[in-house]
Image 1: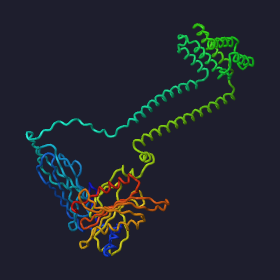
Image 2: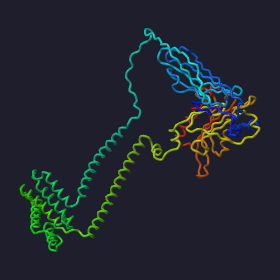
Image 3: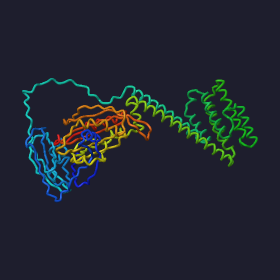
Image 4: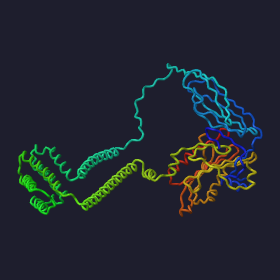
Length: 564
């Protein structure tokens, strides 16, 4: 097998049996004289190494701008030698337009390798094609250099027909974003901004709530001072926030239901705490608190409007009430501290669960939106393949390999390198053939199955291509296929090599999965250079990616120029 950019020829390989095309077996049964099989080409090593012969030539030393020069390098060497031809920018200042695959022929026990390049230059002048380095068994050999003259193309503008300037044309920009998608993005952006500000406010409120009751109460009083409620004569709102701060502090620190109690009930509870010794408040503090709460009730429910001086004085007294209350609370016992810590841990776990639930819901909504966009733009199959993966799609999108296989060689592009295969064959068939090679990727039951077989006949063997085509049905049937539909038509490669294309559908059982699957197949058959070449591709019928792979493989088939 020879890669496109390098030529490797090896001999002295052990004789082994390789896989044979089933179509060949059909032909053998039909004729009673000939069998097709897979056999590795056997070559005898040369006993004496000879000095390689290297020559280079060009078809022209004078061209016009943009015309091409054919540059040939010929190497005659031992069949066991490894030959590497130059590639890339070694021809500077000339540019390489095309580098053809290496043509190989045999001269007795030696190989003659011919490598062709097409060069060009788009500036006029005299140029030198430098010596090219050819590696033979890691030994360098240099070719001759060549002088090339590139002439200008003379254009007679007086005889050139003039045409008016064409109007401007809109150039398609490729993929266009649908209008509804912009609306979706706008809604998502707006929702994101709303979520950001709500989240920000919640974090700020949560941070305030996490403050200890004493610090939070003083912080609320500071915020009240910055609110300018008094300057705007919003006395009701001012006293509501003022009393709410002191009530919340008493409820959290003294553990009374201060937020729900009336003024008289709250004062009564405080006096009971003072009498039992649980709260060491003085009478003046309780009295000041009672007066302020009563004044706040009048402002909230009786539309009373205390003056600004009184309101600011009440604010100062409330701060002293909070400070005095904190000083009056006895130090908590160890048991109370443990209960507070346990309560704090429970609340912390609840907040964590809430955050996880919120993040999960947001993720689900985002996935739903992305999935909807992908389904509308790319289709449902693309969404399934994107998240679930698809082996044939990975092959299609991966790096493809172009290689030469067999003798006579066939160049083909495949997503994976084909490997040699083998089958048993009758001895009488071997006598009819000079050599045969078979290369396989995958298995018959896999998503993709590719087989390439080449056969070279002896000179006195007459081969009819139609005989091999007639054996396709029986061939597939022996592999376990059923419900086979077969069609055939004439086929021609891009280079003009004629052959026969056999294609259709079949059904095969999958014993391990206890079900059957429908498959498509394409089989190309050629009879080139006293040989037979067959390329088979079998794949799942409903797999659109495999269908594209099969067409790409079939359309890439090429033959050496000497065999056409």
